[in-house]
Length: 225
Ligand code: ADE
Image (cartoon, rainbow, N blue to C red; front, side, top):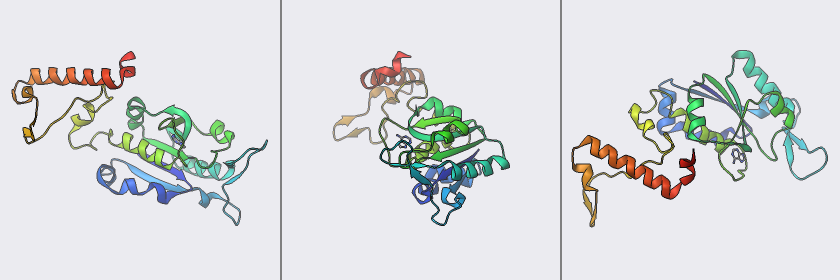
């Protein structure tokens, strides 16, 4: 998989890819991530990427031309499955979206800033608009990093144990059950007995019940579907 990230603040988004699972995925050539500084696609001396809003109103708007130049240069090199714009008015990211994107070959992620991008950029280029939650960030970069993490860990071969992504919360619309490690008794707080039974079916049944109970208590909305 190849991910191209278009941003005015590459320094804000690079570090998550330099550690842990994302770094391992890149080192193993399971994914490549490329950063494009929008200011490199400007033509004026000030390298400006934004301007005031037509019709008035506070806040600057990212202009069409640098984004057009950057996306067009990328599209001239290869086909893209999705051109994603990170925006608080996009569809809220969930595990299903991450699963779908993890199967794509080439994607572009466009990070917005200020008030966002000129609507014509969205109309002309963007194929998917994604929000990471109902709050406003100062830019799309942190959202793009969250999206990339959620997607990259699902690419086959990225996680050491292939089954571990399948037992994540949300993978089957349930939250994950409680988990325990040594010691068996920590300051009087004991690990549930069933986990020492060695009876795989009983353990699996207990985990399913716990996952269901936790989902019902914390996220009943997930059970509605
Ligand atoms: N840019 C600003 N806020 C955002 C959000 N909630 N999700 C994605 N991109 C954003």
